[in-house]
Image (cartoon, rainbow, N blue to C red; front, side, top):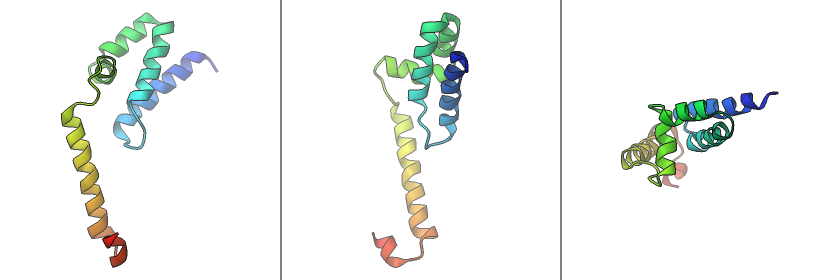
Length: 98
């Protein structure tokens, strides 16, 4: 397998991670950016300058991390999912209490 396919795999996994909460986005995009930086300046510049994907990498490189708006949204979605599961999916009272 050509090494470029591996780097494209990291990029693909990072893109999939945007939509799947169990798959981390930023680590895969950072890995793809590091690989592209060593092999292809054109692809690296494209990735860093990309409207959607470049934001994750630039925020990490600038030390900003995850924006507050995304943290609030993610935490809210997490609690809504937990509460939905507790009150509508689980029927055993002792499990609800726990």
